[in-house]
Image (cartoon, rainbow over all chains, first blue to last red; front, side, top):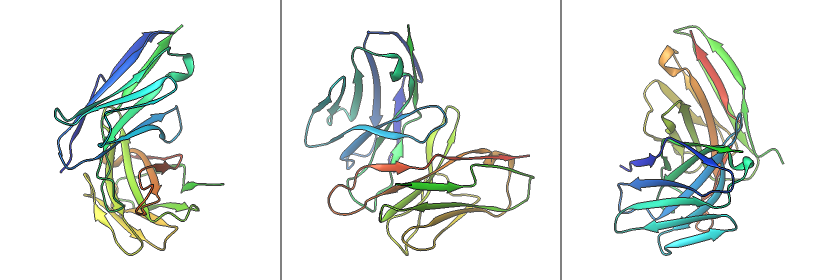
Length: 113
Length: 115
């Protein structure tokens, strides 16, 4: 089955700097890679996702890149702000209703003022 | 819109007791999921239901049972709770149609402590 590894487990960056979180997956059939943000005391929420037919996707300060050959994908946050402090999870799955959605172990991102 | 509603939000059990976590969604989604979240372990899939009438095991199903009561509701049962089941449990739903099947919508979580 699918296995997703996520690094780093914790990340502290200066406000205004960039943050990068990396994930690798094992199942070459996975074709959908979402990223979720979890704020304290809440359930995770989708912030961006990418399908395997594209290599990069951007939404304002957030971007995700995918390297299918190497089976890894990354989340990039530019111009970080205090409200970016949260736990971020990557996931991998097949884009169908019957699929398991397997998450990485999470990255706790802290933004230093 | 309520989205995904979980009850109870907090529960303390003694070892060996049983309990059921309830989950309901009002978005007419086909697929529903139960995850547990432990420090350093991320979100681990316990069971999921791709559609009404079907359930399948996830990564960590031992010690749990589920019931997809109808399209709206998906419950998680602990028959004989163990301290290792102390965790935060999240229910999630997903549209599950041919298009736009991606996004999971999560509930607020249920914090369970087993003494």
